[in-house]
Image 1 (cartoon, rainbow, N blue to C red):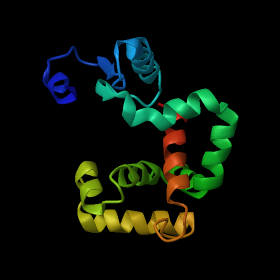
Image 2: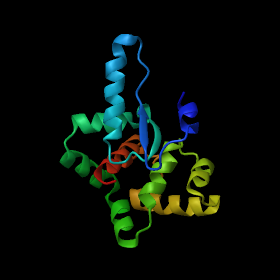
Image 3: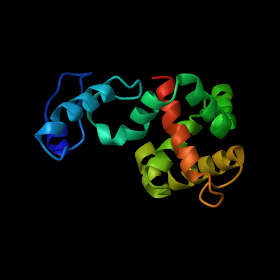
Image 4: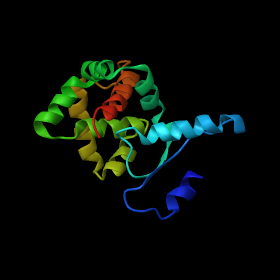
Length: 155
């Protein structure tokens, strides 16, 4: 259904969200509410969006106040955020795409329109700033959550 919706012509700049699949008609209002909440997130871009892809952001938005989310991002990714601020490097976005791809470097490079070697260099710099490769130190989930929380801080 998402692919069919993505193929439809929409006015430029329009955004549409599809709520989670419910187990029955009784869950239709909940699904619609989730779709509406997804569209309110600052990180949602124009086009058709699956609200399930933003489950962490939706949970964080209702369960954690902005100050706690920001503190978590700072603890987990403060060096990367500061590097981006000083050098306008986009390492946080690179890390988010890599994590969202399941740590698949080749796929992340394609999504970012980078050569694999450039992607490897960016990841090496990110790992230096984060205290090592998160796949080997138990921080993978925390870093992934921090990238999602960071998306809530600014559009």
